[in-house]
Length: 153
Length: 97
Image (cartoon, rainbow over the protein chains, first blue to last red):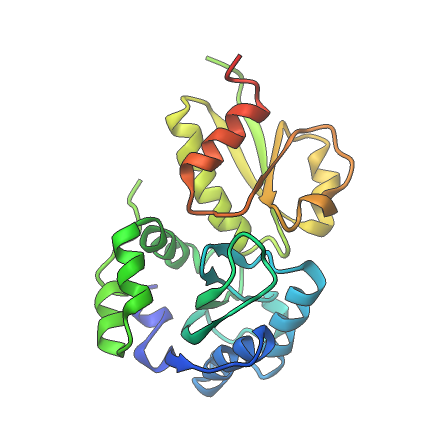
């Protein structure tokens, strides 16, 4: 599946204001629900797993990948993007505050692998990541996200 | 060539975060010249699977929850920090001696 299909422009949310991490996950989750790729209960699933397991979804400084289990209401493989302004603390000492959310919905263990590779590639490229942090229009975000390719090994 | 190792990448659900970890660990073991199978596990099955693993890698937020296992645990806070992950794996496997 192409990255553009997993994360179409309709699932890119900018200037998301949230008062805490739960509201931030709700905001990105509602974008997923609105585009029909997850059920409403998936949002609660993402919040519940983060509560249960701690803020381990903050995978790098400034970036979190909220997600829940396939059986929590994933309809089709998907990603949603949110840029939090201002950034929000998730309780992860090393990586807070969080600027960017890549919410993930995976119906199984394989279909989202390429998308994750691409995210990893962008995040490990310091220049691209800096650009992404500053990107405040959908055009600027897609220019960065859609023009990267997952590493081909 | 050293024997083929088994590395367990552990996250909350065994879907997203552990997959990212596996990608990074695959890169690291390649540069270290090691051969290893990197498998995914969620936190609830990790302890059982850990019995047969040579190394466990997980988020530092989850490391404490794995509990008492004999394999060394490498905990990662920044998944994009390949240098840090490399260092952690080298230390855990005593490669610097």
